[in-house]
Image (cartoon, rainbow, N blue to C red; front, side, top):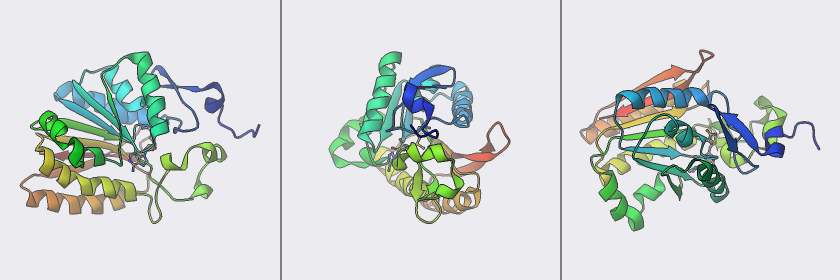
Length: 240
Ligand SMILES: C[S@@+](CC[C@H](N)C(=O)[O-])C[C@H]1O[C@@H](n2cnc3c(N)ncnc32)[C@H](O)[C@@H]1O
């Protein structure tokens, strides 16, 4: 076997945020830095009562399962475009037994879809929602800047678009005003991991989103925070 083949895919598990999770070639091997995203979510969820948690691009399900290992949030959705990834996430939840609804969805698409609209409108109206997401953010095919073992991870979990890699986040943010219109939630907080070189692109995108949101009589504030190495790689977006 190639010496670069990730050992996590051979032994089928990985440790993340003090717990063991199953992984296979259909999911990203969770990265250490993502624990800082989880820590921030837990810190905030200890102060603010959230009714709903949505993890967009759940992969092996590590983000919601780690958050729920510390704080309770009554309603939890974990979505992914990959049905194979969802099987892994559901398997991990079988070991933990949390109340999580797993949905196959293109970003927040399932929440905007007419066929499930009624059910979800009933459950999301006036709710304070926390979205935590670690979407793919590497520029398509940018192998030069990646270690050799990353080649064995699924492209759908790595690559975010042809120009900057930030395109999937742009697509997610475009869905936000539609999400608000359909569900009329209370407050929305988004915590998201991005590339360390994407702050400028993210700032431009979020400034545009703030203008759209203002047109809908909502207010958007955003900031960036750093991982434990001091690298600013996370977005914090509040819409009230
Ligand atoms: C970087 S991985 C993160 C996985 C896991 N949340 C973690 O932090 O380890 C990104 C995940 O997003 C999913 N994904 C990619 N495009 C998507 C889309 N358009 N809608 C929903 N999920 C998507 C991938 O299948 C993958 O599981």
